[in-house]
Image 1 (spheres, rainbow, N blue to C red):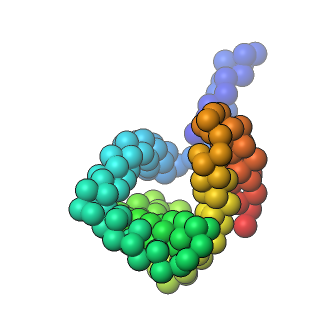
Image 2: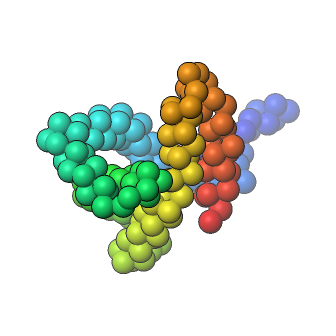
Length: 169
């Protein structure tokens, strides 16, 4: 725990929330794991999406999305398929990182099925709302030369929504 020195007496006193040395070591281990995992997760995601792209599976999903006739629906269907494929490819790693590791460190208070249900709800909401920023980007690319600057500026409200509002729900 935190030790505060009393300058008058030279004595030390425990903080309001003393921490067991074992728990402190466990939290340090968890923090180190998270730092390494962020690095691994980036390259893992890159590898999995490269697999989807270079095997031609993304082209197959594009063809499947063509079942819809309107560009809006094609884009939405393709993005939904891509999110689903990403979810399925990452599922073993997500189970390990977000359920097993969290359980081992004492941060999980859900059963596997409760946790998995929340993952499915998150996937469904992502599939539902991904169309808003994608359609915005799609329209900008079609109509504006400086689409990248407009998208960057226009994405600020979406980022604020995702960072501030989404975690509450």
